[in-house]
Image (cartoon, rainbow over all chains, first blue to last red; front, side):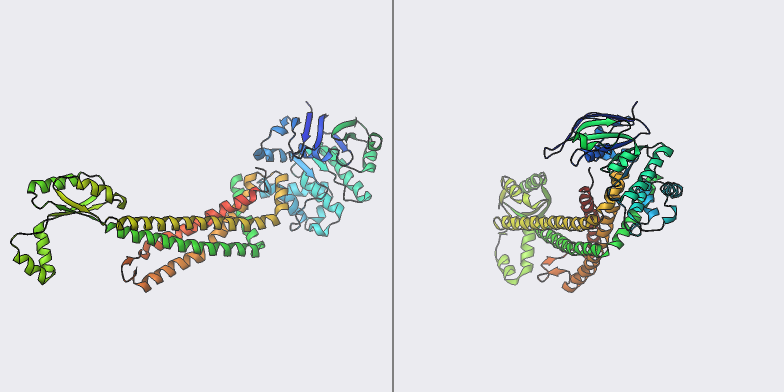
Amino acid sequence: MKFIRIKNCYKVYKNGVAAIADLTLDIDKGEFVFVIGASGSGKSTLIKMLYREEKPTKGIVEIGGINVSKLRNRTVYKLRRKLGIVFQDFKLLPKLTVYENVAFALECIGMKGSEIRPKVLKALEHVGLKDKTRSFPNELSGGEQQRVCIARAIVNDPKLLICDEPTGNLDPNTSKEIMTVLDTINKDLGTTIIMATHDKDIVNRMKKRVIVLDNGVLAQDHMKGSFKISETV
Amino acid sequence: MKPFRIICRSFRDSFKSILRNLSLSMASIICTTITLILVALAIIVTVNVNHVTKSMEEELTIVVYAKKDATEEEIEEIKSRIDRIPEKKEVVYKSKDEWRLEMMNYSETLEVTLNYLENNPLLDSFIVTVNDVEDLAPVAREIRGIDAVESANYGEGMVEEIISVFNVIKTATIIIVIALIVVTAFLISNTIKLTIFSRRSEIEIMRLVGSSNTSIKLPFVIEGFLLGLVGALVPIILTIYGYIFAYEKLGGSLSFGVLELVKPMPFVLITSLLLVIIGSVVGMFGSARAVRKYLKI
């Protein structure tokens, strides 16, 4: 059985904009998938549907056997606890230290204090920030902040990591660092990663599966693809 | 143990939030204080108006006179007929001889006059009280239907007017209390909305890392509860000391003893309890309402 199964999925927003049209897609466990496309091609909508911030208008979105589209609002948190989400704008809490920001995710779900500490330190070690636990976000560089965000996303050992343009705010060198971190997580922990991006260099260098969206329609799906958006759009 | 941890964490967070947003918390507490003072005033006025109307209503009676030549059996008949009326509260019989004695004791002129008369010109009577002042008219009508009854009067016209005025006052004060409670709810909820607005990114992250709606909402609900509770303190002190002071100063009544006031104990304690409940419950619901906006429920 496929880990992620999207079948005949449509999304039409209330204002009438059709963001996704008849999308069918399967993703295996442990895959690293890039989702690319021009602005307004439906990348963000697809990503948001995966963590159930948006509901498909029609069709099925299934993660690990759970039909995400059928989840009720009050039970969405159960899905989110199995996912890690990385954002372009990091979404860190400025008044909390690096350690507290990562621990926050576990505190929120009611984990015991004694269990939280080793998990947080392990996650910070994965992203190479073990020596910055006491720093505040504004004392960190953009790349470091993004690594904190990744640590927070993986601290609960998710099976799926969803990244919404994680390198969008970073310079090329820092982006490379972040991609190395994500690649390590994918290989070492076996976490499935889905990443929406605009970054041509990254996609070309990584040689991973690439899904190209064009006006909400699946335009291309290459197993070891590269950034071919210019040819299709 | 997990729910317990979440509750502990919510309490810790709500205290932290109150202290961190001290100026907003103070604004919210002051708003609550002011409205609760008004609520307390309205409650005091309502209860006292009700008390006064009730004691005045209790004084409203039906005076029934038997016919001049009524026999003892007929008097008995009247008494038992009135006794059978379900709305009546009490029937007191006063014979014409008792009346005569009472009137003779009242003034010398009356004594001389009554002594001069050979027959007692007065009538046997009953004083009837009813459970509900609204029943005065129908009960009087029913009594008039008894054969040996000469008349049954309760001050028609004036009584109806008094009752309708009392009803208007009662309704008005109750409406004022309810309106003030609603205003308190809005004020608390709006102030908490401001605190929540400044913490919306935190709420967003909580949602995204998988906090349940309850565990997100709980700290805010507790915060509203605490703000309402603290906001009720000053109104309670004012109610207790203010009312006792006013009661003693006025000697327990208004208009030279005509309108008797409610005794301070246990009235002020009940009012205080009511203020605590209104403050905290309204605070809780106000903040629950405010936080809903940021949660997809």
